[in-house]
Length: 98
Image 1 (tube, helix red, strand yellow):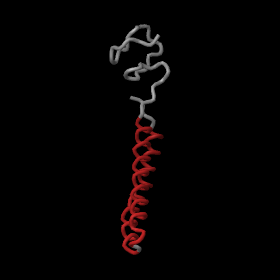
Image 2 (spheres, one colour):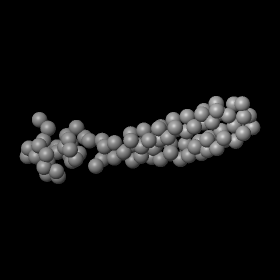
Image 3 (cartoon, helix red, strand yellow):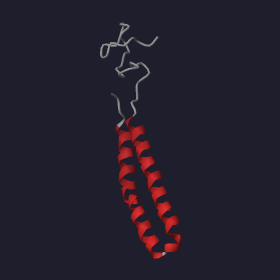
Image 4 (cartoon, one colour):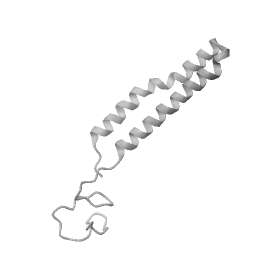
C-alpha cells in the first residue's frame, strides 16, 4: 500500500491543533451558567462547533489514509505492474487493466 507520509503528517498536525478546541463544550457549559437566559444558544453553538471539528478530523484522516495507486499499478492492491508481461498481478492474482 502506498500511503503518502506528507498527507498523514497533515492529518496528525490538524488533529493535534483541533484537540484544544474540543474544550469549547466545557466553555459553553460554563458560559451558559453565567447567563441562563442564553444557555440553550451557547450550549448548542459549542456542541455544534465540536461536531464540525470532529467531522473535519475524520475527513482529514480518511483523505490521508486513502491509497495512492500509480497509473501502472494493480487496481486491487496497488502493486506496480510496469514492465511486466503477464496479464495477472503477481501480488494478488487479479487480472491486469487493459
